[in-house]
Image (tube, rainbow, N blue to C red; front, top):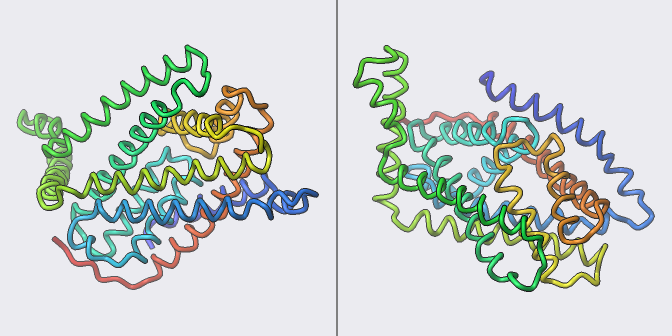
Length: 327
C-alpha cells in the first residue's frame, strides 16, 4: 500500500472518529423524538444520490475503464467521496484517490481524464440546477435584493470559468502554459517530464470527446438527477420539523444551500463550512438558525455513515490484487 493511500485512510479514520465524537450520534438516537431513527430515510436518500452520481461518472470514463462493471466504479466513487468529505484537502484528495484506484485496473492518462471530466460534469450540473431552479422559484420566494445580486454575479463568473474549462478540455490545452515554457527551455528536465504527462492527458481528453460526444451531456443529466435528491432530503427534513413550510420555500432553501456549495467548492466541509452554509441558507429564508444547524448536523451524520462505508471500501479495494495494464 502506497504512502498516499495509507495517509488517506489514517487521516480519514481519525477525522471520522472526531466527527463522531463531536456529533455524538448515539445521543441523537436517544432523543425522545427519535430524531436519528426517523431520519434513516434521509441517509438512504443520500445513498440513492451516490448511485446516480456513479452512473454519471461512468459516462466520463474512457476505454478500458469504461468497460468496468458498475460495482468497482461505485466503490471507487464512495472511497474518493469519503476522502473528500473527511479530510481537509479541499475536494482534491478524493479525486486523486479515485484516479489512483482506477489506475489499479489500467495505467495511463485515462484515469486522470475520468476525474477531470467528472469534476466538469458535476460543476455544470450544479450550475444548471441552480439556474433552472432559480428561474422556477423566481417571484415565489422573496430573497433580499443583495442576495439575488450575489447569486447572479457569482454564478456568471463561475459559469464563465466552467465554460472556459470545457473549451480548454475539448481542445486539449490544459498543458498549454507548460508547453510554452518548455519551448523556451525554461524549467529544465522536471518541467519537461511534467509537460510530457500533461500532454498525454490532453491527448486522452481529445480522444474522449471524439469517441464519446454524448458522454459529457449524459453525465451532466445523471449528476442533475443526483443533485435533485438534495431537494428530496430538504423536503423530508421540513416535513419533520416545519411541516407548514410551502414547497417553494423549501426549494428556495435548497437552492441557496446548493449555490453556497458551488461558491465554497474549494473549502473542506469538515471545518464547519457545511453547518455554516446551512444556517445561512435557512436564516435567509426566514427560518431560525437552530433549524439550519440541525439540518447541518443531520446531513453530517449521513456523511459519517457513507464516509465510514467509503473508507471500508477503500481498504477492500487496496487489498485486491491487481495487475494493471498500460496504455
